[in-house]
Length: 314
Image (tube, helix red, strand yellow):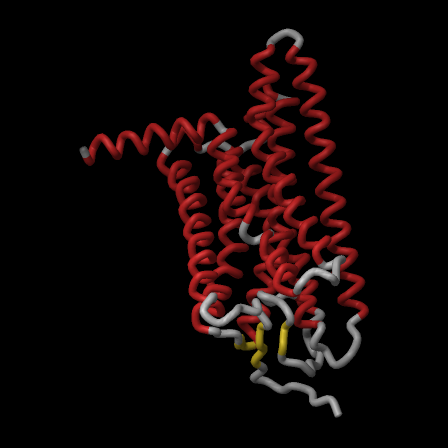
């Protein structure tokens, strides 16, 4: 007999299979990763907020990406650290749904925000004389809000299929809660949720790829034409677009690693679980480095304010 669970439902995350005595060491690694995420992304936001010269659309959108990165890392790493240090694997139904919702929102919002950034760069390079009249402050904030609203709505519909679905299991066989991990515990099949999830993922990934690719192909074409008369315009276009392309490629590589890892059942469960959380760790750690290395304005502003503070202390 299969017993249908009744509220209050408490799940148990399978987590990593950690050998006795190795938990504190793995906790320190996760803590170090989280500190690096908070420090790197915190510095980016701090520099942009205190430097009025960076109050421009590109850097406002970078702030939205930083918030997205912090959302993804914060929804996974603190919970993982509690598991590694104290063996806390149980999680109530509402916190489990909240963690899964935020984890999926992170992925969807990353793509939609990058799409808005590609549109901004397209206008800046292809319509430089009309850029400020097109990308007004109102339009900028409307585009950013639209990116978040689209992501939230897509994920809200996905999780609406959890309503009235009876659950018969307690153990989520992952390190963190996800839509699929929770619905795998359903007593009945969930074909509508499965079809919507696949359709939504394919449409969002493909649609954003087409829009981003179209924008940067047009940017490349325009910069090559402008570069014939002024090479500085071409280098400036490359410099402003490079961070966004690098962030998008990095996110897609992390997503690809997660997908591929599930296609190799011969891999140990620990390795598969490790690959599944890379998407919440690698982009949030590396993205601030990309912004700093590629964006000359952000790098100069950081060095300027950091050196000023050091001089004041000495």
